[in-house]
Image (tube, rainbow, N blue to C red; front, side, top):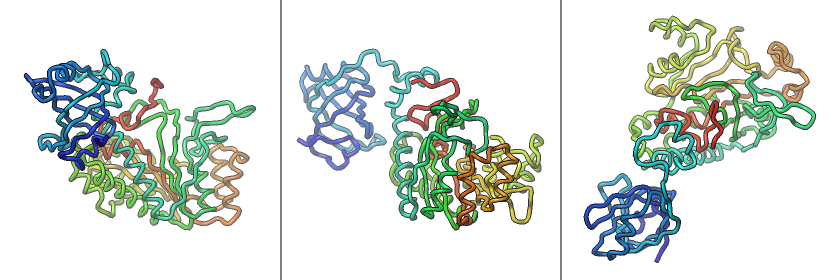
Length: 432
């Protein structure tokens, strides 16, 4: 008898198989018991018929508690009424580990309760679906960059300075000096690009921002590519190709998860159609002003309502180009014809999900970069290694960063970013 995973049921229709699973839910009707089963790969239904298994096995099945682990044998058959499309007619079952008073029941629970039990909430069908989409986005990320000639380079998590030039950092003692949890690997990726041409990093980043919005996490994962001999327009093409690749990969490999989440798949297909529209910061401000947004003026950064309105004016993700110099980090290259803006772009996702990518062309001139470092009040000594990149064979280079959890939130169509992380770190929450 073959032992299989639920996800492989389609390949074993009509066969007697063995499966290790947990009981997610159950119900009975007379002489038939229905078990909702999960094994980490998918969910499907097990059917126990009293006349086929005998009274002892039937009573065992009927009295199983939620999240009891079992080993069962039975015949795989099609089930056209379910999302999954298959079920198992159970012939025998054995209890492996009992479960009593499982706290997360099929009834509604509050968010705080679910977050306190995140270690168990991950077992639910909705959270399971989101994590499978997360896994696919990670898999597709490596595939995309490997196929396009990028080399993965790992930046440090402990740093001695702030890439974004901000004070919202987690500080720690590093023997006899101060160190910080990384808020970006970008500067290190610039160094790596000078050695390998096209590189990307994928790792955790940390922001000590006291934000409680549905778009922010304290700890999140970033994908940060950097490309030598690359101007901004070339970088934008890579960015939109990457996003389209991620969305298509989720459509191709996570159909069941998208169904569980009720995600509009036809809408997602639209997001694979390139190119994405582009609008300048200047035109975006004008668009907002013409539509009654009197709370923003040129030189301000966009808030959530502004980004949502701009994105909803298009049917696909939209690039907002060339922001004012005063609201962007020190390393961005000034526009060639204007001193007040820099060569950069944010990619805004539709449906109110906000910025998912931020990128720019980088300053390549040593003296200009040094002037910016001083203007931002940063230590020339701390950034000497970064300045070296402009002293020894500087070239035009561009890069961007994608926040993994924001991308998951948007592609999955979920409301809050906390569900996009297996164990989210939020303001005032570090448990479990």
